[in-house]
Amino acid sequence: MIKVSVIMPSLNVVDYIDECLQSVVKQSLKEIEIICIDAGSTDGTYEKIKEYSDKDSRISLVLSDVKSYGAQVNIGIKLARGKYVAIVETDDFIDENMLEDLYEKAEQYKLEFIKGDYESVVSGKDEKYEKRVTRMFPRSLEHLYNIVLKPRKIPLLHIMGLNIWRGIYNRKFLINNEIYLNETEGAAFQDTAFYHQIVFQSARAMFVRKPYYKYRLDRLESSFRNSNTLIYTYDEYKYLLINKQLESFDISKGHLHFIYVKMFKEFLKHLKQYMWSNHYTIESFESINYIIEWFTVKLNKAVEDNLITNHDFSETEWNELNYVSDSPSMFMNLCRKMDAIKSDKKNKFWESILNKKVIIFGTGVYGRRAYKVLTDRAVHVVCLCDNNDMITQFEDKRVFKPEYCVEKYPDAYYVIANKYHADDMMIQLEGLGVAPAMIVKYNIDYV
Image (cartoon, rainbow, N blue to C red):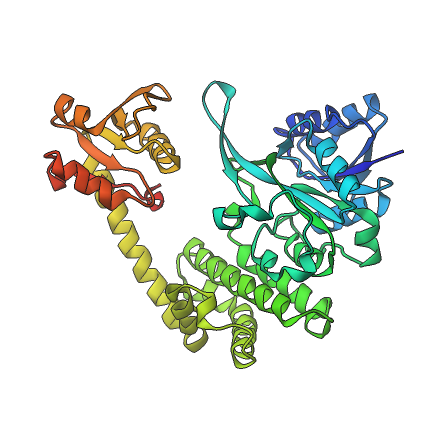
């Protein structure tokens, strides 16, 4: 009996396929089948998978003539023989007990789907990974972990965790409800409409507070680096609203509300990314007029129908949406000016620490990012400081209290790396006698 069918779409991932396949074939759950759908790799990926399939009867290799992630996954769903299906992207990898843990809970609680958290991984020193956990729920909603949920009655889930590759899904549930991926060309964002359909059609689901899935960030071809994400976002929501006839579907206004909130947030984010990656040229902007018009028509209608209000967005987001709706060209000029201001701040940051002894204040997520960026650029980081007495070592650097650093390194320049308490940390350093000109706040935009 096959318990889980693992669907693995691939295209030119030869540098990662070994680690990915190893993590799947070594799963503690043995009653699995592994369906690899390759879209015509030319770098040796296909041959690598063939070697594995020749040695492991659980692995089947299918060659697809369509270069579409959605089409590849759909082929896998239709071929699958397991009670549940999992999707593992072939430049990522998973914990060896992921499938067993999720399968047992899915069976115990009769779930239609179950998902875990995930870790973003970046290659670090000595062939080790730097990891950062992404949680499904913020602290205020942690009570939703590890209990049976009824997504049909929790529309809020639409704005969380769109990615589909960190869980398993009951195959009959997918097929009976005709839930498949959009089959546009390429391999980006084609799980968006899939996830929204799962939420408003599922009666029993669970989210586990454990990061089984390892999502690779440092592959240059990754979809989140793609300059065409705006087009992919448009394709997905047009597919969901038009092709799947969502607006005439029998779902509550609450579901439509959160789908629209998520849609417009994604539109705004990827529109700005598109303009930036295309250097704000008039030609590139004109080429996406049809996309902007489609979203703005939907926006105005959603506001008119009271599906969304300004309270669903930050003040900045709401103002930007209105700018786009009123005058897309003015919005582009505004974004260009804002980017110029960011660029100026970035240049001043690097100029200010050039040839200086630097102490990073903060050893959390921002501190780790700042340390990597600064050391990659050969900035002389002498040590780090933190108010936590328990932290004494960070990578290959010592960590001291701020008071000790100020006394030990009177000529050092301080880079504050903290998202929420930067102002308090600056006041603390100034109170210890550090001149304001010797302190700068690190920002992720500086990379």
